[in-house]
Every structure is written in structure tokens, then in C-alpha cells.
Length: 461
Image 1 (cartoon, one colour):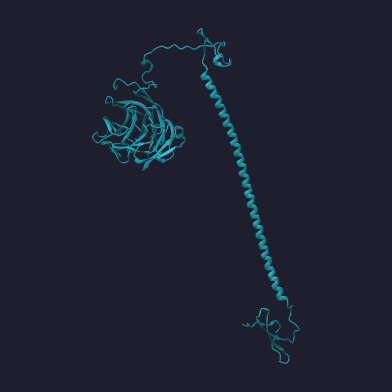
Image 2 (cartoon, rainbow, N blue to C red; image 1 turned 30 degrees about the vertical axis):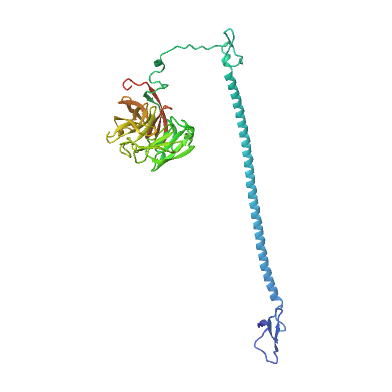
């Protein structure tokens, strides 16, 4: 199809149009190089010999315009390339600096490691020397005996003080042994008394750890006096924070140091939720009261499973007969030299403390005693040598252990042994008969008290 294209040199047209004689016009049609049809209409100007300006100006203007655009484009590309180069250069410099820093730190760590290895080797060398010296001392007799029955001085350096006393002569120490009746060796109230007896005194509280959250306001912490199996020892410390709706976590610490640093070695999850602070440890099991019930639970620490469950007959629970500080402390479990105990009350006892000895495996009640002191008038209680002891106040800084009941004689009597609540809110007191200590939880603080036991007085023996 031939498309008409009219090319008019309008700048060369002059109006009005001259006469036909003067104006020669011609129309020419031809194809261009692309095959399109062109119409060329030509009119001669009678006044101008040629159009103003060069016929190449439009092409030159177009070329100039395109050159300007190309120059701008090239400038932008050059700027982009330079920017990218700078970015890459900055990135490479940053990576190089980071690599250099890492290298320096690695070298420093390597030097520290070598220094520590050297110290360890030196300590090992010294330990070996000390071990050899100790073994040599163990094998070396203190003195040599000759055939005549006399003694000879051992061949040791004269510079040692033990062998260079006075004039340098060896001085033999002799001990004379005199038999004395046992009662004179172990007087009443002596802190070295090893048998069971009455409580003579309670020492000042010793702090081992302070709980670091509101759940540690009150709780239970213990050491098993008679652990079973090889997994845990009597150094293992157990802790339970009893603030919360669902108390199930039992924290195990390798020893007192780990407790003080707050690094548990294990966390056990109890099968049933616990209520209050009346739990205790005995012979590889945790004994506690199930929440909102009079059910007692024995949780085996080795198998991490429920070993026994039994209801404590007629026992009040969940606020019926608590200690004076509350806390649903209706049932308080304890262990001492004579076994497992439950400290509680019943409706029949009208709030007076009832003490029952339990079978440690089945939790069955073996025997019970009713005392003449009301449970809600005392702050706490514990068992030691088959005797019940009560604490008068849980907030007074200087209070007393005010009552003792001996299950051997079924006799109770008033006491006045000083006892300190250093942190003014003592919510748990339990006795460990191997450590001969009281464990207490006093207002976020886990403390122990050294105690002294003495020979039982005539009135309660």
C-alpha cells in the first residue's frame, strides 16, 4: 500500500500566490529506499533565490540533540560505575577491617589458652609433687626403734622446726591415758553429743541463698538425711518455690555452693501439684501434701515417679487448721531419727496439734498422739528425736521455741529457747538429723540453724 507523504518547504512559500505565468509548480511522486510512496509538491519563490539557513541544519540540530542526550547518559553511567566502585571499595575495606579484628581476637584467645594451659600444667606438676611428698610421709615412720628398745632420731633436715626445737635434740611427746566415766566426757548440753536428746539451744541463722523472684517469698528447701542410690547424695540440695497456683517444679543442686550461685543441675516435675511448705525429704523420696486434699504423696527421686499415695485420716486441709501465718499449712511432714511424721489437726481434736508416725513406704499411720497446744497459735513445728517442737512467732526477730511434746512419754511442756527470725517472715522449719541443723525459709531467704541436743531431762525421759 502506498502511503502519501507530503514534504512541503513551508518556509519557502510566499503568499499570496502569484500568477500562473510567474509561478511554476510541479508535483512529483516517487518511492523512497524503504519502498514507501512520496509526493513532492514544488513551487518556486519569485522573491527568494533559496530558503534561509542551510538545508542541513535540521539534521545537524537532531544530531546535536542526540549527542547531548548521549553525553548525559554517559555521564550518568560513569557516575554509577564510580559509585559502585566506591561502594565495593568501602565494603572490601570493611570486610578487611573485620577480618583483621577477628584475627587479632583469635590470636589473643590463642595466647590466653596457651597461658592457661601453662598454668594448668604447673598446677598439675605441683599437685604431683605434693602427692609424692604426702605418700613419702605416709610411708616414713615417725621414729625408728633399735633392737635395744631405745629410739633413734629419724634422718630429717635439721632446718625443720619440729626437729630443731630447743637445742636440736629430738623431743618425744608422750600421752598419759586415764579412764574416765562416760557421763563426764559428754556433759549435758554439749554440742558434740551424738545421741538423741532434748533440744538445748538453737544458733543464729546462716544465709545460703536469697530467692530472686516473687515466687520465692516462701517455699521448701532440704537435704535428704539418708539418700538412697548413687544418683543423689546427702550434699544434694532440693528446693521448691511454693508461691503459685500450680506448684510442681523441684530444683536439684549438686551442693550448697551451687545453690548459693543459683545453678541447678536438674529440674524435676512433680506428678501432682503441691500445697504449702510442709514437704520433707527422707530416704530418697520427697513427701508432700497434694493440693486441696488430705492426700499424702511419696515421690521417688531416682525413678522420678509417684511411689505411694494415701489419705491422712480426718486431717484438716486447705486452711482448716493451718499454722498462725496461714499459707494452707494444715499438714506438715517431718523426718527425724525415728522416721516419718505428720503434724496436723482434726475436727475431733478441735484444732489441737496431732502427731502421727507414718510408714515411710506406704504412708500408713502407725500411731498418733494428740497434744494440748492449738496449731493456729504457733508459727511452725518440727520433729527431733521423737519430740515435737513448736515456734512461737514467724515475724518477731527474737522469738522462742515455746513447747515440746515427747511421743515416748506422751508428755508436753512449755519451753523458752531463743529462736531468731532474722528476715521477719519464717514460713518453713524442718530438722535434718544427720546435719544436726534446722532448715528454714525466712522471707525469700534460705537459712540454716545449728542446734545442740543434750541428755533428756528426768521429767520427759
